[in-house]
Length: 450
Image 1 (cartoon, helix red, strand yellow):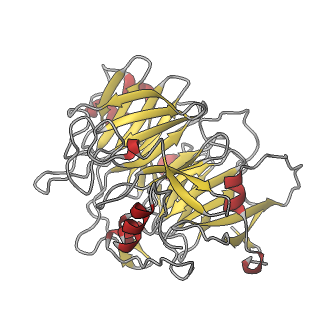
Image 2 (image 1 turned 135 degrees about the horizontal axis):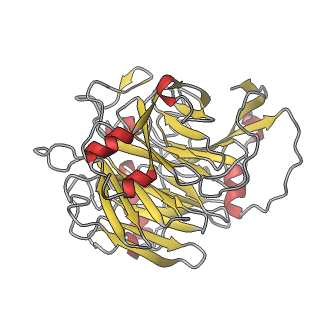
Image 3 (image 1 turned 90 degrees about the horizontal axis):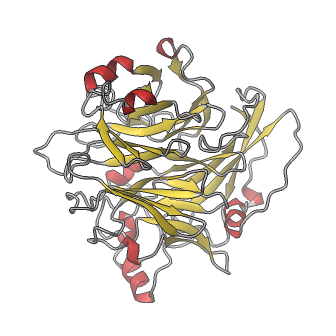
């Protein structure tokens, strides 16, 4: 189906959700995969009455797939500053800790006091292990829009992008970066409202010829954010931009050198052919970014090499019809890159067509997987020779369970090396089996080169 379903507590709640078409307000946005293979997803509360903003994919005995609120329905309660209000960005690090970035804002209103925060749950125990509420001078209740987060567990540091989307039309955007040393409890806001975090006001993003937003260009500042495996370089990009920016992280933490003026002298750039939403490094220092204008994923094996003189332009995968608005990137710890495509531009314009039966005619949200043979930047291993995809092939198989994942249809790209490798045996969870179950009658028989 084409809308997100939940494990509602009562039939009355489900009937209200369906009969009042509240599913039209729910967008599948973020995704991350735990060490043991659980898929966590976010549904930001950008419109009214979104039942839960954070959850994990679960499968019942009949193979029906839904979103179960995490850590509970109670912790997804609207209006409670201690609960989770609206989540877009999440991260799962190498300790199997889920970091939850709460924007605080619900349905375009200013956040309530104490609601803009970062939470961290140990997924091994489901216990809260970190909580940091951001004061107004770090994250404005009206003018901040916390977008995404990366974590350096080696140095106990967190890096956050703030797109600076304001809830008050009379205010100007105020994008920037937020950094937090959770061991020392050292919290800073850096690069606030500078070129590298601001939207490019000359760019009007188009997808398949469609302008993103109908009346005015989307003006979204610092959005995607990525950390190198050694934690020494931080990449980020405004969404409305064709430029990635990066800096050595040591400069951000030096109070004598982290003024906007001094930091801008240290920033380097990497141009690209497209605007980007999500981005991430793998553990071999390869950079992957979503390509909004080419409906796919761009990658670079060595993004800092000659970065000022090149343009990031190599597509790993793309599909102009079914990969529109690739959003968050993740890794499943089995060698697969995972990402969501959600047609965000059409969602914002209220142009999506939702179906409440098992029809696959209007699929709005998809989860994709493409094999890259590596893992997340947080799972550092000895560097291997995996710097190119030149000899790889790809084929697309559409996978629909008999229950048809309500709101989320999983499509898998199988990528096979010409050079045969010994396959590792891995234990798959029931969730993974359901997500990877394919309809063999609809499989693509021909392989296409990337």
